[in-house]
Image 1 (cartoon, rainbow, N blue to C red):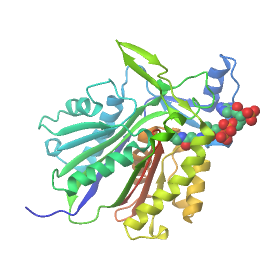
Image 2 (spheres, helix red, strand yellow; image 1 turned 180 degrees about the vertical axis):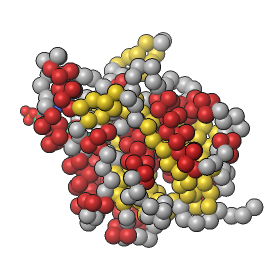
Image 3 (cartoon, rainbow, N blue to C red; image 1 turned 135 degrees about the vertical axis):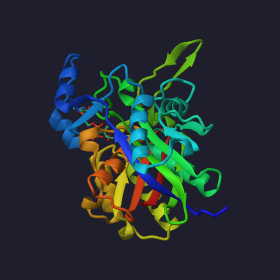
Length: 328
Ligand code: UT7
């Protein structure tokens, strides 16, 4: 068997659900609970103008399915050639089975492919990509479908203006294949569970009842401070592993959480702001879906071209963080 040293992106796809929510619409909703916010505050402090919410009948696997189909069509790959499906999500349809198993069935893949979810919150896509890359390079699988999909709107407390203005729903997907051409160039993944409490949904199910709070809690300023530092560090780690300098990066796709964090990272890495892909303003923070959504948007609007080197990096609950450098 021929040795393959890399995994390559064959195709990308994404999907946004149909409920479009502007800051003004959200401000009106919050005002009904006597909570004050404004388009001006949200734009100035976050860079977000709007987000999309899934209607009640649409689950995370439904969003994932559409994004996956688009990536598969673009890849011109036979469905039954997909041997590995990973879904990065913190908002699975069920406690179990995994969203990846549901997506496998909905796609009609019945070849016994491996399928599992990765739970690393907003770093989930970076984690999933690095895992798929490792499994492909080890020779275990040739073709993988990697998806980031979320319905974070269902975790939001619409009485908490610190958090509910930030998040949205969506999905993005890539098909990876074994290749002797680069490919994924390097990756770095980390976590520090001591910071679990600053970003969490601290509920659990026991006896069929939710104990604690299943809604999202966040200490925004603490997350902000940590994010800026670790995103620079992990980007530099991935660059060093790939034996590259920051100026060799064509595109930066940070997790789309806050434009102030994203610009800060760009500046720290010495990259011009034009080399950063920003979908945050329209999508909000879609957690594990934010990076593959931004990747797909920039591939399809022609900014990211074959051969371009893209640095993606995520940060989120856990605390988790990670970076991957891809040659497209
Ligand atoms: O996806 C995982 C990663 N997540 C992130 O990276 C999020 C990181 N954190 C952030 O993006 C920011 O911390 C936030 C956007 C969440 C908050 O922005 P901030 O500049 O850190 O604001 P703050 O929490 O320090 O609050 C400043 C003021 C406070 O009022 P006082 O105490 O100064 O009177 C807040 O009560 O802004 C107030 N405030 C709001 N005002 C209007 C907080 N949220 C709102 C709001 N509308 N929605």
